[in-house]
Image 1 (cartoon, rainbow, N blue to C red):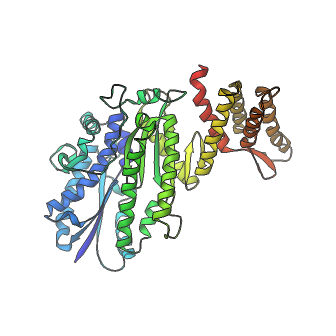
Image 2 (cartoon, one colour):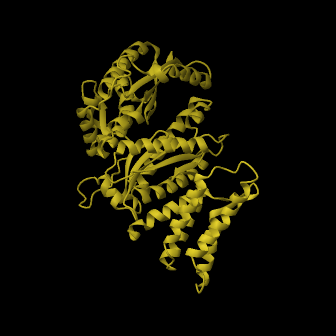
Image 3 (cartoon, helix red, strand yellow):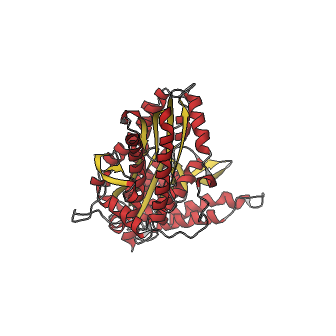
Length: 469
């Protein structure tokens, strides 16, 4: 009898945050999970003296293999030892969970049994009772090892499982399919630091981290009606991210401004100059929409047909990458909770269409300053208007309604004051009118500020900041 065995490496995001005090150790933490989920199923099959052809899927922190029933006890013993050594290396930040079930019945039944077994290890059940509430201090040896793993790309992408090696990985074998792009320093002989990436941004010198995930990715996999449907789905998502992220990073300004942290499974993460990350998000949405429409054209439902992202900017050039990584994770969760196909950026959640509108509006505002000589002060005036509306609670009675309904006209008055149109060319008049219209929308009987306008405003202010200092 044949048995499906699925394994997941849990705690990857917390692991990266715990060991991400530097760019190399943060990237190494992400890379480590990807490499381990590739090397582990191959190491398991080698231990059982079975062929690699039994691997159904791997990478992105998970794997699926097909084993003969008589190999299950030995597989359990091997994976138990892997789990213990992985926990020792990561100070229990990483844990391997797995489930096995017979290849009996429909695939939906097999999938349900696997999920039920894996869910047993959710929450506190995934923790060892010892030292659960103990203080955590990242191990210096592990952090240095992770940093070297990232520094030595692309050579370090070739790794095999060895339980006696540091981190359970030993250099050897064929390179695993992982995205390896790193922006280089000005000399071209080493990866650029986050500070260098931030200084390459147009406008304010700042860097950030962008994280993205497929919407309802696990739901789409669970809806597969057969293993023949399930495996092509996993085979599509994994190479899409490893391939498209790698290729995109070699185009335009991305190759100098963006470094890949992780790519594979159901998502990706990149670090780089703030302006490049916004454009990177737009390109990833466009590429994923186009590809998903083709691959999932006949699939019912919206699951896995869109992707959401979260962007966090570092408060300073020397900020901790771990804190920014955690911030990007929070922004990603905000975007996924708000809607599908969303990006959380500058305190607002926009869909792909709204983000395109924000880009066009940002270009329009910069054109008013650069081409028509408008006073950049108008960006601050608009920002003050947004701050006022953010501080005031929604009107709760009729007495406060007139005040709320007058605010749009105050916006027009401010624009009239700082964008004096007298004697201006016709093109300036049209651009000024377009800016006014783009910031306001009608809803529930009164005018409201558009979230895309707020994003465009912050975008333009960051782009002009260096010139105003």
